[in-house]
Length: 199
Image 1 (cartoon, rainbow, N blue to C red):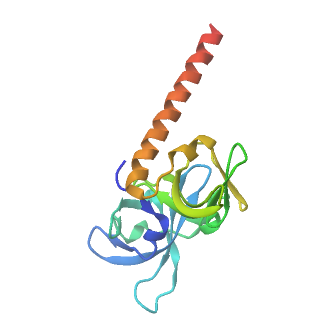
Image 2: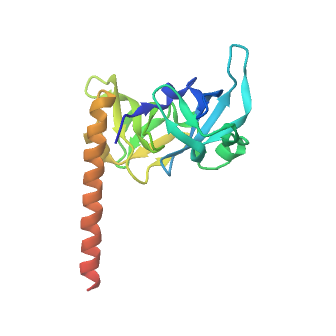
Image 3: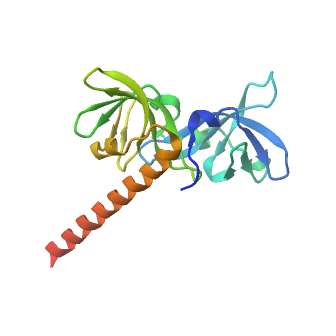
């Protein structure tokens, strides 16, 4: 896993063709919560007086998600807005501000931002966490987990994900890798146990 980025950091990042032409800038990141992937971006024009474009950028047309620009092959990569936001599962900013609950019913805080990997996967969420017993709030990063449920009211993550929180993105990268390795090992054990029962 390379460098992680917050979805909010992508806002206003220029969209540039491989030929060097700046064709737009990112307005919002749109993602499919249950699938845990970015579906694309809504766009603004370039310049001070430019507003929203009537085009969007599907994730499939992104050549590279760089530190300073989103690269596309050419202007023809831009598409109708429905190509990005038509999915009933897609939710742009709809997850921001919703409660994070574990699958065991514990309130873990509220979503502040979405953590994105360079390949478009959602690695996790930046959360304003509640810390008992004083009920102080602090900002942490929590892995997404598989089978996460997202609605307008709540985001449900595995309780185990709360053991892999981090205070910053660099240390969160390592926590996500450990969390995924443990989930994969658990799936493998469950699969082997199921095979043994069938014999």
